[in-house]
Length: 126
Image (cartoon, rainbow, N blue to C red; front, top):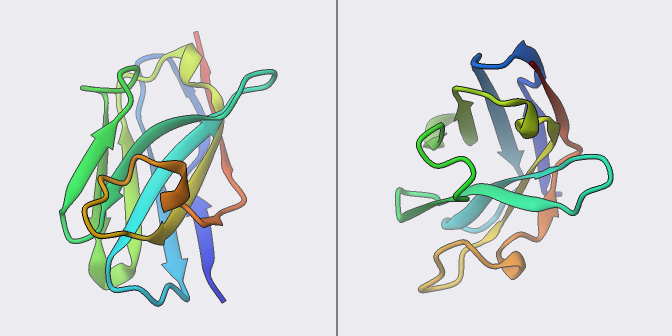
């Protein structure tokens, strides 16, 4: 059974940093898309960043470019989201998602993400 477990959320002041972790188990494909998404109260879910495992591709939403970095540790089946220079508008529930990477995919399409974690809360105070 495919399972994603997020950790690392918390409360931080503006300008601070957090690192989120997403540990996967049960993924059968050797090449996957793993992404981070977020949803704030009353707002639609938005994509944040994604990676094609094996270093194939990375993607960042404009709102986080230059501040967030997505990376992977294949030995630990874990993808990280390093978040620096956090802003109050980054406050949201952050979700990890993953799925088999289709040939040629840049891991930016919703169909790339079949499995979802439960989420971890990030709160940034001003």
